[in-house]
Structures are given as structure tokens and as C-alpha cells.
Length: 322
Image (cartoon, rainbow, N blue to C red; front, side, top):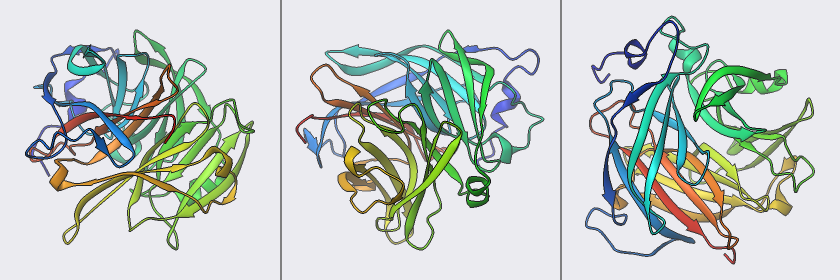
């Protein structure tokens, strides 16, 4: 326990609305506690990063991330709050944050039990932002105004088998909108945090139907988020913490041609880091396609409202030819 007050208690109860907050940003020039200066990490090129902080009690615990345009982003926390803010960019690198505000997600307030507030994943579809929840397994889509979710627009029906496989604190963790280029275009890929028999569990949900898929778990790491590239590759963010191994974060890719129901055999490692890289508990991931065919990959960390952890926003580029 961090001893901090419930962040939702600092947000308005009726009517819900966005509250401006100040967010402070410290530029991260490169990964590594001594500043390695490396340009490439695995198959990803370093773009830039920020360590974010705020005096607002509700700030922190971010588990899902999505960019609404080049600089405007939305993040959700495991307490059911939403942060909307814009990056300051210089030569394509993040240098600060401005115009930040927070609110509780529509339909969530202090009276809602914590296990039902646990927003984990974010994805955009048809101009709405869709949130996957852990604990009380559900997917809810919200209408946006001014970069903030303002009302419930849709509840995505889920098969009973998805609900049965995702109970408790290691349930539905990631949601990703499938590009229109594939056979399941416009649908969602959902992934569970809890592996079963050494396999990551996922579901393709589209047109009122769902089909399960699974892929081998890697070194005991668990899914924390996922997103698709423009050409249909599924990018999966995973992490784990142990007393012996410390914190490990990695990103794997399932090529578009391998993404299908059933068993997925091939998942390629793109990036791997640990505490020596000054990484934190990275839980949110988003991908923005770039004009040159590359993919801008953004990560945000969940500080668990713990003073010994940080909220980091990191950006990498995956070149089109890798």
C-alpha cells in the first residue's frame, strides 16, 4: 500500500468532468542509468522519452495508451481514470507535455468497487475509444469530445468463454483494433494476462463472433498490451517481475500472415530490457504509422501509485525493412 488517498476521491462525483492538471516532464535522452547513448535497442530505433510526474492525486497507474493524433494522447489507469494530454515535440522527439486534464471514465466513480474499475487496454475504432477491463471482464467503447471519453457509446458483447478465462486480477489485459487489410478487419484482438499451460491466450472478436488463438509464452513474461501495425502485424508488450530476475520487459511481433485463430507458432522478439536499462513497469503500448512506412511505438509505465516507481513515456521506431 502506498498510503496515498484514493485518486478517484479527488475527481468530481456529479457531474463528471475533466479537470486540468499540471504535468511535469523530464527528458530521457537514452535508456540506461548512465545514459548509454545507444541509437538501437533490439530491432527498434530510439526516438526519445519523458519521465512524467504531477501533484494531482489521480495521476499514475497508467495501463493503456492511445494517440489521437501526432501529439495528443489518452491514457487510462487501473483506478478507472483517464488522462488526456499533448506532447511537445522538437524534431520529432518528445520534450514536454501540455494541456493535460483528467477525469473518471464515464460510469465509474468512487462508489464503484475497485475490481470493476480496472481499465487495462485502449484501442480506437470508428472514432470511439474502446477500453478493456480486468476483473469485471468487459469491453466498453466511449464517445470522445476534446480528447476525452465523455459517454458510453457501446458495450462490445463477449462470448462466455472469454469471461470464463479472464476472472480475477490476471484477466483481460490488452485490446487491439485489427486493420481493415485482414480478414477480421474492424474487429478486436483481446489478450489475457494469465497464460495457461505455457501459452498466451487471445481472442479475435468481430461481427458478433469470436475465435480463440494462442501462442507460446516467453520466459514467464505476461501480456500487458498490444497493438497492430498498419500492415497487420500484431505487436505484443510483455513484462514480469521476480526477486531473482528483477523486472524484464519485452516486445514481440506476430507477422500478419501468421495471425489467425488456433495455434500461432511464430512470435519474433523485437525488444528486451531490464532494470539496468532504467526501464519501468511498462504496461501501455500504441503504434502510429509513419509516412515512410515505419511504425512509431509508444510505451507508458504503470507506477502502481508507488513512490519508488515512475511514469515513463518512451518512443521507438520500427523501420519498415526490419
